Image 1 (tube, rainbow, N blue to C red):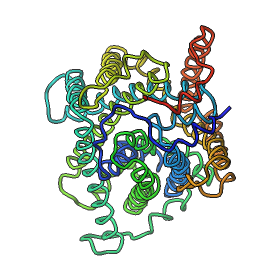
Image 2: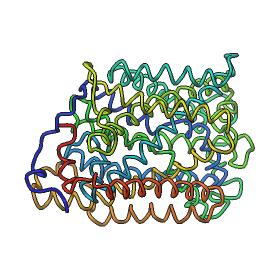
Image 3: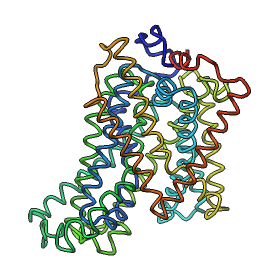
Length: 473
């Protein structure tokens, strides 16, 4: 059962104890930084190899699905502000088990990402610094943990500048690439001929376009972080409305525009595309120091995701604690409004995972990475189902709150949910992705079992859906 009328009609954001230090510029860059990671600069090569120039369409389709999901989430955040964002909406719209499950899966996902990004950053730094990889990974984690511990404003400032570097790099690449395509840049140009010159626009068949969507969909993950950060912004409704619409359009344009130029500049079947497409494209344009430039940009992207992962995991852990799903001492904040205990508890798992990355990289650590690989899709499906139920409840009780609406309700939300389910089904037919899917299902089963045990021991309040309305009071 959904919330009572009195809960639903409450328009004020519950008192959270968190500082409201994030400004609109921070929120904008948090959305961009969360969605643009190293996957764009490196992982896009595998997508191009799968679909050829038609990878452009794969990015458009995946971007549209994520855009719709964030629109649904934005609708709920603006109408019913919650410090726990989508985990609270799952709790309200679907039930206590959904909030518990989504919250813990999402926390688990980001504490593993902390280790993944710290290791990736250390590998990049190894080009310039002679320290052991494990030590550099630990130093990166320590530095960004400290940033998060000082204040949320520091987190926002670091994310603002990290994201700014990524945006500047992508915009510069797009400008230079367009100059090359139109013959203004020095040197010979093939114009648009590479789009069709090597087996056609979809050389591996149109089915490969949708096969690539399965890979691309994960590249856009992270944009939802802005809805969690909304609880610590001066103007949460305005920031979320702006970030979940206009900003996401920009992210899609960055992805699609830069991928379009890569496949224009380089033949899709060029060996260099798979290893490092952007470096290869810059070298084709005869940009001096292309490798160094991209290493700096990729390192920035890695540090941005590491910074966001520490922030996101700590806030989600705090939300879980506020519902009694984690120890209550994790709720407390210091005098600066920083949940230091939740930050340290989340990074402890990161430290352990970094150690595993060096002592058991191909066994235990690999399983940990695979076991959270599909959490984003689980989250998108739950957001869609939650929006369908929460939207109908708001329409019954207080439709004036729906100032930001999901398009073509309920048909488009249902279609988006169906597409994500199809992505999960498609993963079963790909050997590499099947491993991630099955490992992630194991994680899902473990969390569901944990909830069942919690409920069996009488620790789940019967009015848990109402409790969601009083988060952190």
